[in-house]
Length: 89
Image 1 (cartoon, rainbow, N blue to C red):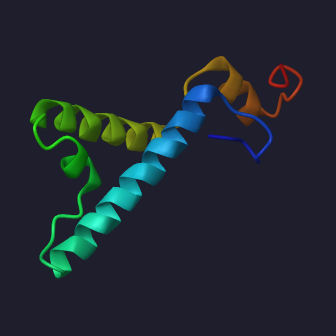
Image 2 (image 1 turned 90 degrees about the vertical axis):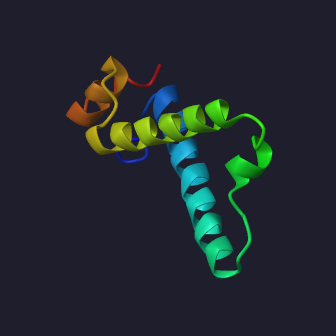
């Protein structure tokens, strides 16, 4: 997550990637339902490991929650406050 595209932390970047992957997976799952096919990529990759599949869904859900409320780290808080001097490290 970045503030005005200028700063952010590594966790925010991971959250962004997880949300993109999760969104694409949901989109493919929906298209697959219309075509009567299983296009759920997570399910296709981890079909024999349902617990790992559930963990991935939980992590993506936590990323969505973090996206809503924002990153609690000091770097992101300083960025949101407009203090770019401490976030340029």
